[in-house]
Image (tube, rainbow, N blue to C red):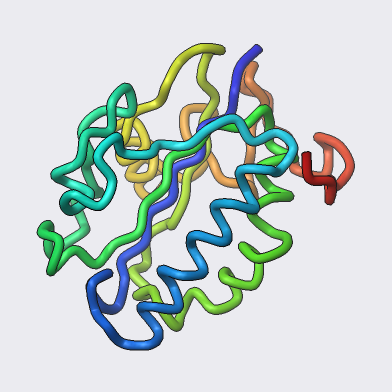
Length: 185
């Protein structure tokens, strides 16, 4: 059974190491959000570096998730002191569980404040695509598909929640894939 890959990318207004209250607030809320999402029905796994806290995203060992890379339009730093980005790569059982996790609870509250932390770049901030069971998407896969959505819009190869596709490439809607899920496993 195919799984849904979700890649998110945002350019922060200031580097992650900025001691300002807003940046600290983003870092602190991120940990709570990841804990909540990891318990959400339909969540499978996410990219976590083997050597967390030992460098910038670019320096870390991401294992099967591949070398960390960013979209061509990211023009900020790449060191611990200068990196001003937030990126995630995760796997889900389907559209509805991923949608529910992203648009409810703590993550929804953070989305409502995204413009406090992130620049408005004019680029999409996430992309979805289907992968075969057992396949681990790479950071490069996420970047390529995000750039595809920016350049060409949603397609079976790379899509958004607004214009999703089923694993067999049929256009669908999140409403068509099942009821909301507020349960936590």
